[in-house]
Amino acid sequence: AVPLVVAVSTAISASRGLLIRNRAAFERARNLQAIIFDKTGTLTKGEFGVTDVVVFDESIQIDELVDLAGSVESHSEHPIAKAISNKAAKKLPVQDFKAIPGKGAYGMVDGRKVMVVSPGYLKQENITINNDTVSELFEQGKTVVFVLINDRLHGAIALADEIRPESFEAIRSLKKMGIKTMMLTGDNKQVARWVSEELGLDQYFAEVLPDQKALKVKEVQAQGLIVAMTGDGVNDAPALATADVGIAIGAGTDVAVETADVVLVNSNPLDVVAIISLAKATYRKMI
Ligand code: ADP
Ligand code: MG
Image (tube, rainbow, N blue to C red):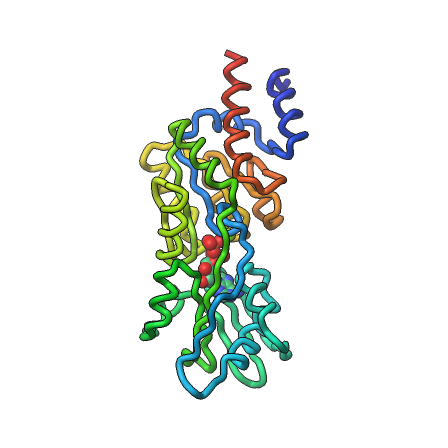
């Protein structure tokens, strides 16, 4: 039988959009020592806009670069892809579209192999970037992706996202509770540092590939900490499953929601604080 206070708490929380799917995890939430947030879509809005486009040589015009990239990205669900796709004036047919999880997108357009990829992907392929404008864009804390045509680097597209206004208070409250605040992202180090400094996070991990997210959670657990993970993406599901408390942002993907112990329907980081406070109040009453 479910103790009455727990049943009442579960009902109250559900009416506020906090869905408890795993009661044992909810109980663990009262003793949390660290919480790891995914960046994009969790601490930030996940609504990117294109701010700059750079071409690296005269063989291609900015408009053509954006059309090729945007055509491929119109087949991707990623928030970065949506922004680039919106920017394209015309969409060309794409064959063989493939998402490269945590790294980018691929497709054949007009007989050309077009890829839109992360800085991490370029590093992995030993492609070096030598462009002052791109360095500046990184310094500005922008998300920068690169366009390869037939395996040659032709340009870069910079994007900006916004920190959710509620994230500031959420982080302040968690720190007051003595909980370590951390962020995990596949995005570049400069963006991660900027968001981390703005919010006053204790730690961040940048350029983390999808299959490494769960490993990062294990590393923090290995420090002897009880850890929650909060995320929204398909990429976050293994990390949510590994954490002592997996929290999905409700507007995220079905996979994340199905893996999580707790679902925050309103996609509000302040609800993370609410669920921890509720766990503390619930199990205090029982002792
Ligand atoms: P996060 O961990 O912040 O949610 P992801 O793991 O989804 O980010 O993506 C990590 C990085 O991979 C992005 O910052 C971007 O550089 C690149 N990326 C992923 N998907 C795409 C795409 N469709 N188009 C361009 N870049 C992408
Ligand atoms: Mg994400």
